[in-house]
Image (cartoon, rainbow, N blue to C red; front, side, top):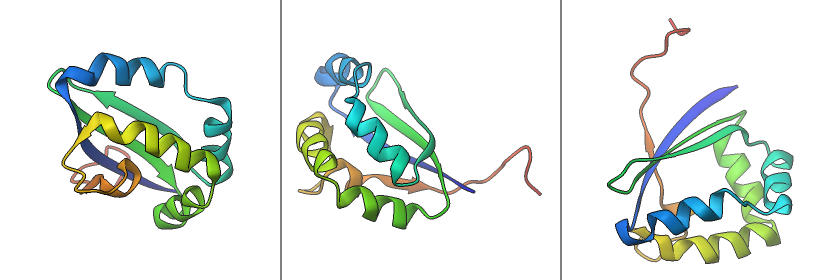
Length: 108
């Protein structure tokens, strides 16, 4: 299973609310992520708004496409978009920047 890391920028004045929303992710959203192949998914928020995400998936493009076809994801993305900067009209699930892995302890 491949590992992916990505980043986004949360508006500094919305960080507390953003974190609060993620303490209560809708059960149907959690289930949709699991059903569409998102594994070991984590989000980390730095105090300046830098959000780092980590996810494992067989194929991230396929997992994203499957999520995009769910109704719950459309609702979640619409609610979350207002928390971010630099999306240029894209949803958070389309606007994140993938990071290149440069080291993995278990890797070669």
